[in-house]
Length: 566
Image 1 (tube, rainbow, N blue to C red):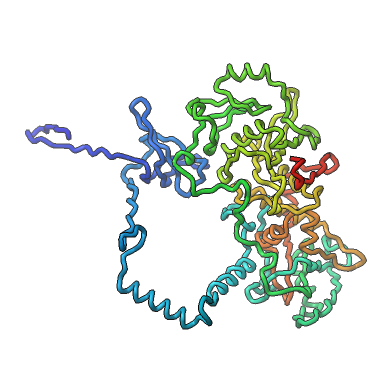
Image 2: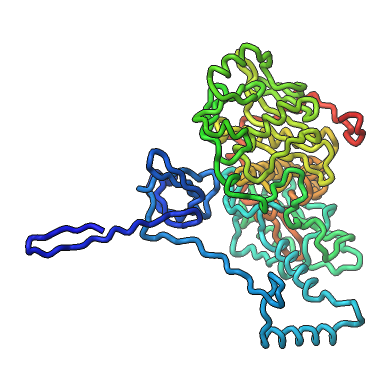
């Protein structure tokens, strides 16, 4: 309270209200967006600290990625719109038992009615008919088939990579029914027939040869229309566009085979979010110096507590050992003999090399790599038991040695067909094509092993975009390279696409749905590649300069089921 006298002898009393901003409070916080403009998103206060008598607040912006969390000063807070944390309501007690709610007449009546209905509908004691549950499951599966859903078992990020998402062109006269009205796409061995001209389908001419489709046993085949109708359909599309027909196979069933299931949470490195606390939600390292780069961590990483208060954490770029000062790093470099990651170099082309590192034989390096990776990966947990994993480190070579660019890890034995557990491109090398190169290399290893693979879920938002883009470009590359032979339409099945690319069938189907290529036309499933998709794919491939050369890969897979090889 403060007094101030005015000219007429009256005294005006001012009241200064001090607001105590505590952890859990929410309020708008000033920040710069990508266009360097001011914005005031809602944020939650996670921690408060006092430095030289001035408070600093660690905020998490609601509906923003955690890597944007930061310490802010009080002048960036909009205290007028402060929201205090809500107190958790205590659960009332009934009969002295905590957690049970007090009874009420309405609840008792409803409970008795439920029991009466259940006993009347049950065929016998101890048996119930799961009608509603089964119905709900079938509805959810149908929705997954009919909509252009994102990549299966991936977190719901609606963002799309510029190189991988192209809208499909549809002409008004080319009417395609929704797949809600027809049976779902189930058979993976059913061939895709490509309706083409007498010459190559890719170049296209006006002379269309009609391909007669033999009737399927036990199923009435819907009419596909006359030759004039087929010509009209191709005239509506550009000559560069193609249409791929999916004929119903004999083993087709109205089931959910091949449909992307719910996210799998059984991976070895999936983070258990139920154990998050206020410590792990906050970044604990301010800056990391790795070779010629200084990195700003995005997330928490369990480095030793005494190192978290340092302004800069120094890492040896070859063995990844962490040190507390520049002098300690210089002393370490005089004794460190490594100039490349430990392990076997299994790939080299130009300045790019890949090293295979066994988590059991090189435990110290593997643990240091996991600590560094955890600074930029939030969806995976960190295990110090690196024995069950292999690490593939990508490096760039110069006169000083092999500098780490990124890496991915994989289980030696995976029951879920995972070919990647964690994958990371370090921030200085992002947006330069190295992410797709890591993904392509993981699938090249799967090809040598003779398996199909999929990344462990959940993926980070950036990892999700990279995989979507890679799957889209790889599948479109195969579809556009198909050529007719002996005047017949080329055909391909989902199984064949999976075998060629080593991409798992569920990922192939979901990518086709994500790109909105699958349609239902006159009794058949077709894949329509519009001119927009073709041109967009060609532009994306022109920008993709880094590719894996299988001839430069020297890799022999091991049978890890024999414990003696661990």
